[in-house]
Image (cartoon, rainbow, N blue to C red; front, side, top):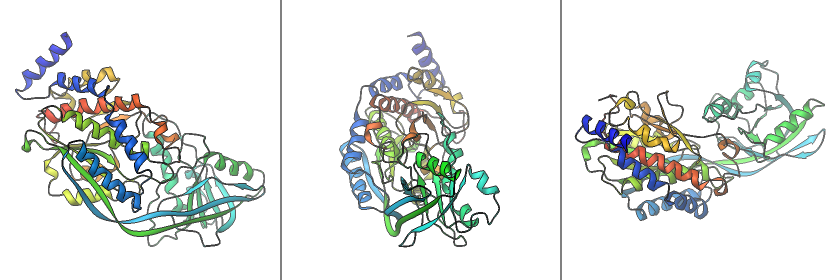
Amino acid sequence: MRIRAAILGLCFAASAACADPQKAAQLRDAALADDTAWTVLESLTTEIGPRPAGSPAAARARDWGVAKLTALGFANVHVEAFPKKAWLRDAESGEITAPFPHRLALLGLGHGVPTPAQGITAQVVVFDSLAALKMAPSTCCTGKIVLVNQPMTRTQSIDGYAIAVPARTAAAIASAHGAVAYLVRSISTGTARAPHTGAMQPWKPDERAIPAAALGVPDAELIAHMAARAPVTVRLFLQSHMVDSTAWTVSGDMPGSDPGAGVIVIGGHLDSWDPGTGAIDDASGIAITTAAAKLVGTTPHRRTIRVVMWGSEETGGSGAAYLAAHKDELGGIAIAGESDLGADNVYGLQLPAGAWEAEDIAPLETVLAPLKVLARHAPFQDFGSDLQDIHGAGVPVFALNQDASRYFDYHHSQDDTLSIVDPSQLRQNVAAWAATLSVLADTELDFRKGKK
């Protein structure tokens, strides 16, 4: 009680109208007993399933998003369409043909090109790291299939992924070294055989496009072991196609009491990869932010909270489309945040420079402490790729850092399903988001200027 009284006294001394830490704490506790996020998550993954941009499932997900936000009481629910050149997977297979036959577990990479109809059969050149491939002679791999067998380091933050993921986008480097196809050890911290897909950078007009796929970790290791004994030959059959399509971002508001106070934009991405049902990437993010906004919407709050379900994050486009659609309204976005790293516990909150020093935001550290969420003053690690464009145009962002220790065991694989989501950790996420949103919605701080 002494702590609460001190916090409230500090808040009221700062401003007659400011964030209320007691309300934030009440919303935190309510979230820990609320299953709205689980209901939303189960609904999306069960009723829609995998939903790559450009697929029929993406259109069903659009309609699902409109219906769900409407049913939960959001206002101004609408769809924002944008053109999309979508990459879609067709039949795929791969096998080691020599020195010992073995069927490979693989997935083609987004923006990849198909093999010829008869496939590609060639010897494999194995590199232990992307750096080794970059330093290799330019003609080292002529007519060969390149495999980069670089392991990923498990970290709580996004750092391990940030270091490992360039290997997934290195087909152009292999092509420049003469390769006819590119294989990469899955960007994964697990040892399951299921491969992990993902997108490459779209091929440039001056690059020689080659087929590319990710191998399950054990299969990448197997090729490396075989190659240490004798030349390894692999046959690849990778089919895909591009389609001119439409993608859709879905949006809904929990209106605030002060239209001039600006809007808080939050959300996750509605699209997913196709092997699993996109539970942690990113149905969880949609569920967390939707549930948190609904909770805050049950109390009076100044700023409107807008939940956005971005329509094409995995193969790109929705962040740029959102900027284009709202470029004249950016000044009215007070701050933005995205949940896109699964559903395991939040462990830190990062705010724009100077925000933690604001007198009515500082008490949020105490509100979040029971959730084991730290007030972090370090620069942002990851705030969601769909926010990069509007952030680059001047919109302040915040990040609720999630524990990624096991996220990349399942990310972009067939194991990304509802069964790997822990309901108690999902509720902890909602509690952290609800408490944070309550404070951000009521503070008078201008996040573009820092401390009041």
